[in-house]
Length: 144
Image 1: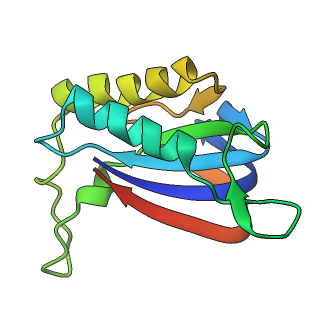
Image 2: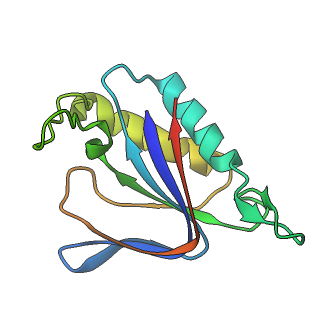
């Protein structure tokens, strides 16, 4: 499982010109699921993301996590994180098929909610437009 986590001041995802999910301060999470991923991987990724300390404290050090700043998550499925870029035209056979990816994508979000966070999201497989105001910018790549 792979995630690109961006610290944002706000973010939203639109589908067919309507807002599907929207947050203020928090994380925009682009989440990719691989063919060998499991529920345990989704749980571990949720733990990593929710515990990530990338917000500044009173000393301007990245020391605070999402809970400490009252942040939310906007989670967008992103199979392209598993792109094979060995040629100029990427291939995506390294990404999990929807039958596996969708339940793990949903489990990741449920695990974040279980930890007390508001989770907004896109729609798996939809053509989405994602807007964000990056804060920093701070962007972290995670893999479990």
